[in-house]
Length: 254
Image (cartoon, rainbow, N blue to C red; front, side, top):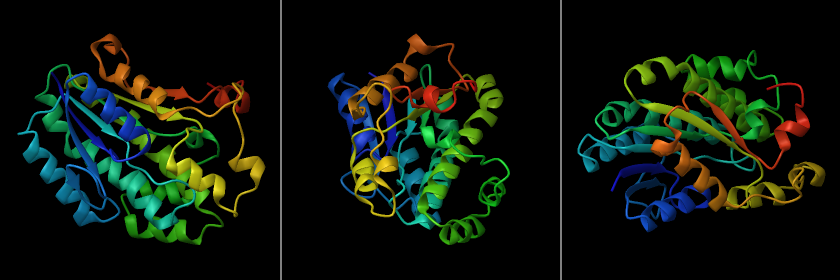
């Protein structure tokens, strides 16, 4: 039996993964705003600090797997998107690193998005503020954007870069770290995006080449594989589970 920590465990992909791991008799510590073992608000610095502290106490300083799944979608408040999607994920990624080093064949997965590669984010002022750790400036820039979609895509880009930047030190410590990039997955987050009138139907209702939306259980199964010993040589990678969207949009970029 392994011990896992999942942020965003109360709904969507996080809930599907939690159920999958529990069904296999693993121990799961869930973190979310409500309906979780650890209930904290990841949009605040104090909530993140409390969440990490409680997680470390519950796992007694040793954990086998971490999944940073908590996130807000393009229908949410853009400033909150910045705090949860980037600073929330980063807090748990770094905060649980020592505990992961004490685990058995430890691995971590960050839930990114196909949106992370859909715009030129590297030189954007929002990405620069995120990389500088300036949460206040990043929230202001996001709030001034035309739509929350910009905050969503750039935070997913930035957290994916943060994951890749840690490939060497984490690898040397014996802890694998990867990210998955889901496309449109049938979750409450996606449903809120589809129903948001700020976005045209051709954007929010777009279907990938496979002609359907994915299911949370499909992403959960993929994440479970990345956490498992079967994926022992996969490290520092962003892996798409998107029904073919990335291939459609960027056929010559990979």
